[in-house]
Length: 274
Image 1 (cartoon, rainbow, N blue to C red):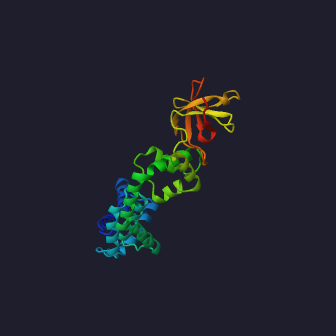
Image 2: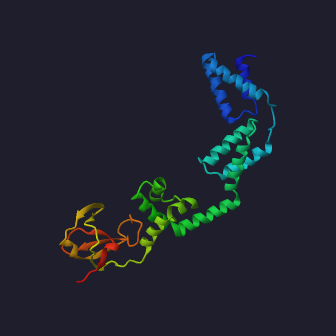
Image 3: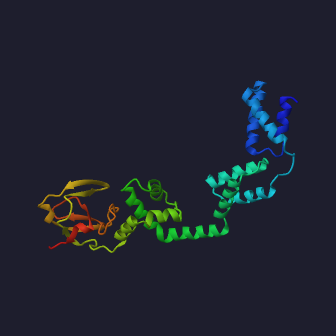
């Protein structure tokens, strides 16, 4: 049998998988251009002949398995790992190659993830996140962005992709650890000093405080004589919390005699006396 006839027999075989069909066609195209095959390409052709020559020309070895996988494919997300795996094993089944026990086990897990019950659970989670929990995730994402390297990729997606919804496991890891709980408690607590309140610095306030001019932050030295100055709260929750502790809600305060407001944590403020 000539090489051209071998290719034609393979390409008309009804069990040839899509992947093997594309590969076989590329070998055939090379042969038509060059009128010959390299030693490596001859081996590939022989391997295809050996595999498909042992298969009957019609029917599948496991038609029920192929039906399961075809039913699963539309339920998986395009470009997801689950879709890629399912397409791969479908190609394997369609070329009459048996799946391993491990492949069948993974298939069952993918089917479970995309069952009606699992899809309903996921729908409820997405609704709960969108309605009640997205604000928590944003607060925690801003905290961890200021305190790398934890959850970097997840925080980036939460803060930059408006339609992104983390899995319930991702949310719990980000927002329900002991540090995140302190951050959330501080952020959502009623402010001790509402906007317009008169305040002054406590003796425990750090010597260097962050000034805020437009979108620019910079640290400024706050001298001894200035520490007794009084000021007014301009904004509550003026910047993301960066310390997992009580009283870390941040206020934007304009002190008397100053032109640029400062960011001060709640624990470093007290009622002003003027």
